[in-house]
Length: 266
Image (cartoon, rainbow, N blue to C red; front, side):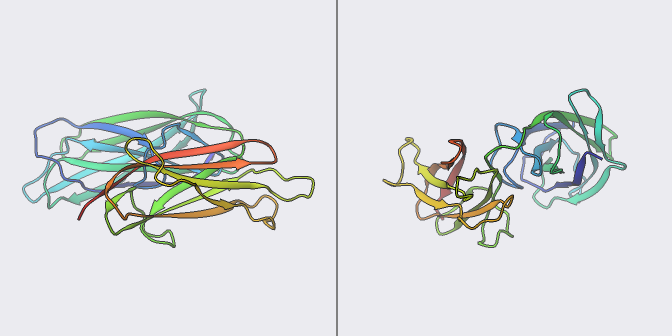
């Protein structure tokens, strides 16, 4: 099997009740569960690939129940199946808020020696009430090992256990976790890399005169990733953009990740 673990999940969201047919919409890769869109769709071997989407048009019973199945299949660029779920995951949800939309996600963990190339992730959802079935397909790319910020995800807590979107209210904290991998080493066999965090306001102006930075420890063991955690306190409302830029001073390579951050008043 080319791929590692598989997980499928869905959670309710509020949507006005309406008579619509089953549909799968808003497909996007994300930085961790509940995270911001991972827009470039490129992943390193060993990373998680998380595909998020919305299930629209599930019929709601009088008690607010929806029942459906969901499965995933992954194929390579030659359309060869490299992962196929043996049996669809069955779900039954009760939606006290009403509506007919569920945000859903499926994810696989890429193996450390995953072959680079283009892959296609296909999600299939069947409404058990009407027997209607819909599928969506979205391509992603596994790239060769290179200097890169990898495995980024966001949480509400310092330990990285309470997954959270980059959205919140004034008074909260957003913790950003990630690894820096495949950095070079100089003549002294030591790394010379650092990461800088900048935040920009809605007018694309930096919120601080200088970036907040951290370096890769000189004593880090060979082949170990450098783990980083930054915190963004939500001290004022607004729409922002967080930027994390890593620089390898040995090889001259850089890696940059940006995503929107929204803070609202209480």
